[in-house]
Image 1 (cartoon, rainbow, N blue to C red):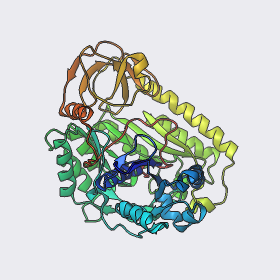
Image 2 (cartoon, rainbow, N blue to C red):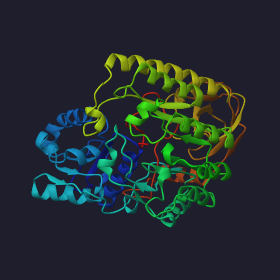
Image 3 (cartoon, rainbow, N blue to C red):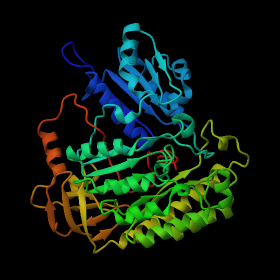
Length: 492
C-alpha cells in the first residue's frame, strides 16, 4: 500500500481474449496518466478486466472478490470492468458490496474518475454505457513490449453466432479510418516497434461501416509501405469475409507474415448452420487451399468447439476430417460450455459431458500429431527470428533464448556468445521439432541488432515512471492446447 509520499499503486488482472489484453494496456495507461504507479507489492487498487464467454466466468470472479473482502475492508479499492461487468451490472455490487467501481466495455476511460469518486463519496460507483463514447485507441496506453504492438482497426461485431455473447456486450462494429490506423502504426515504429498485429473482433470485415469491402486488403498493403515496419499480423478473420484480395495482399506484401488464424469452430455443415456461421465446410477448405497456393509456407491456426448442442458423432467426424485436410499448425480447442445470454445455452440436445470429453480428447490427440508432423517439416530450415521476452519458461535452465519465426512458430535457440536483446533478430537453423515449439541448437548464424532492441535496452536502464505509450502486445504465437483465451479467440 502507498504512503503519503508515494503515488497510489495499481494491479490489473485480465481474463479472456486479445481484446481484453489490449484493453488492460489502456486501463494501465489511464491509471498511470492519473498518477498511479504499477504495484511492485500490495496494490492500492485492483482492477478486474473480465470475460463473460465461459459458463463459470462469474463464479471465478466472485471467488476472487471473496478472497479480497478483508483487504477491501482495510482500504483496498476494487474495480470490475470488461464483458462480465457489462452483462451483470448492478449484480456485482449486490453480490460483492465491497467492490468500489463497476464499469463496462464502452467506457473504460472513466475508470480513474470513478475510482476517485468512490473514494471521496465512500460508495460504489456503477457506470455502464450502452454504446461506445470514445474509440479506445485514443486513450493513453501502457505497453509492456517495446518491439511488438496491438493496433485496433475496429471494435464490436455484427455477427450473431449462437454460442457467442460478445456482440451483445461490445456492440456493433465500429471501424477506424485508415489514416488514423496508419498514423498510429507509424508512431509505434518511431518508438522502435518492429511488429504490429491488426486487431478486431472480425478483423477482415473492416471497412463495412464506411462502405469499402476491400478496405482490409488495402490496409495490409498500406502497412507494407511503412518504413521500418518488419512484421504485420492480424487476428481474427471470419471465413465469411475472407476474400481473395486479402490473400493476394498477404502474398504480395513482404512484411505481412505467412501466418493466419482462421477460426473453424466446427467441420459439420449442420452444426455450422446451428451456430449461425455463414460458411460451410467446402468454403472453409477452399480458403485454406487458396492461401496455401499463394503462400506455401503459411502456418494456419484455428479455433474449434467440441460438443455444440445437437452435435452427433457423424458431425464430429466431419470436424476431424477438416482437421486432417487443413493440417493446422496449432489449434485452440474448446469443450462447449453454456454462455448465459446466448441462444445456444437454451438449445435442445445438449451433449453429455462425458461424450464431449471423449471427443475432445480424440481431437486433441489428432491435432497434436498433425502439429508435430508439420513442425518436423521445419527441421533443417534457416529462419530469422524476432527475439522475444518471457516466451521460454525453461530458457534459464537450458541456456537458450526464444523467438518467433515469420510464420509465428516459437523457436528456442542456443544463446550466442554476443549479447542478444528482446527485439533483436537472429538467424538460426532448426535442429529439432516438438508439437508446440522448435529447437535450434546449432550456433546462431547471425545477430542483427535493431531499434526495438535499443528500445528494450533503454527501458531496462531507465524504466519510465508513470509513462504511457501508444499500444502494445504481450506474448503472441501459436496457440497452446489449453489457452486462457475465450471460447472464440477474438471471436470469429
